[in-house]
Length: 171
Image (cartoon, rainbow, N blue to C red; front, side, top):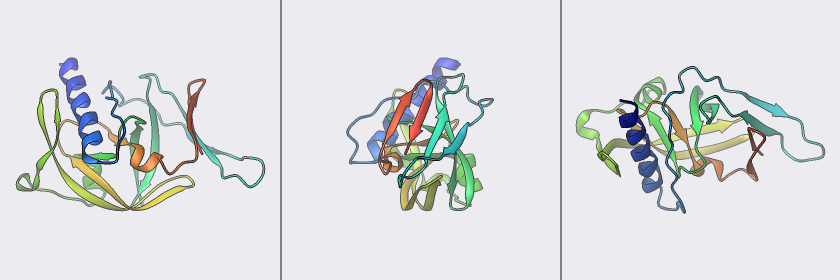
């Protein structure tokens, strides 16, 4: 059962890389057991005129998570530096007031276990602390995605994204 979840996440990571054509690389995400992980996002003051930085602590499953403001709704994301774009779970899409029907789902990628179906959408606003982006392309994956993914289409706005001592620092 767990290996099928990993295969689905691997396929979804490939999907996210595929649906954003400017992507240079795709690295699959690995673990779906994140339900009890707690996001550790906070702002730190930086000397001088530089913007504040967001620091995310690595969780027990080895991943980084952030609570992100999407269209004035807080959504929990796995921050995936290997993913090219933003992928929303069906549950998170519904929380944003987005809907879909089965006849709107199209192949948005191909995973290890076959085609991955979703619906392309546009998000008005995505904001993580000081980083804000408008009119953001995303895809809804109503089945098989356990946590929404925040990838490079958003992270590339940051001046720096680095991992040190079990922390991801975004500035």
